[in-house]
Image (cartoon, rainbow, N blue to C red; front, side):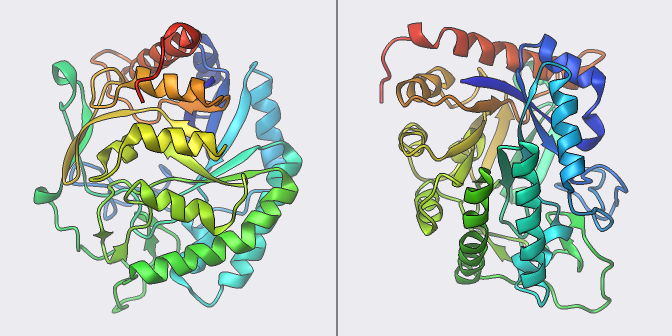
Length: 360
């Protein structure tokens, strides 16, 4: 098992690469979408978010861009484990079954080929209309540490998406008077099936894994769009559409624990046994839909030691990243929170062989 750190585009700096290495990480997961640039105050992930990004100007990732990123990461003694999330502007018509979906698919195929040629082993994606939305931010974690939570009673989950927006990211200007997005469960699965049948064979040839993130929040529908992997059993359905290790899971432990059904330990064991984990978001939560909060890695409902035992038993040798973590009350709250999580993860991995037998 290997430890990594996820960084947004604006955080892919020499200082943060040094921080990652100093904190014990060996890998980086890079978010190249313009999440935090051109922030639009009309868009948010929840009541306390000040706006999300405008990706309408994002250009398709080139071989040169990815090759340079791989080399830059390696120059700091690290490896690039994955690129996370295609910006909506890359594949809006694939998600919405629009007229440009065939051309967008050809573009994605080239992106995957470029990634393979550059040595990017995995691309995480979130096949979702609304993305992550509905969070509240505040002193929710241990000793009042700032974290995020979800409480369905405090929001209207049917709030329509503004036109030209997916995942709270603007991919084109809005059209006045446009009909709100409405996508059924049947439609979203049909679109995913087409996406995987088209792209997985290209990913196989390029030696790139495509890794699907589960829904967060894992509700039945959100903002007019049915959710996809909102129960653990639905990962089985997704992974069976194309039976290939190139069709894998971006296994977010927090999202799995938030789901109303299933056993997270059995889910992790079965997906690891099939060698279908692209990489892991190693985070903890307390509670389930419709009400949960994100916690410190050692303070939630998931027994993270047991998760590592299971991964050890199943021979998982991939990358785990902290994903979200509460902020520590200090001068560098994000860095301190990540350092705490990375240290805990490193200790678990370094002692995995002595953790005793799995209970599952």
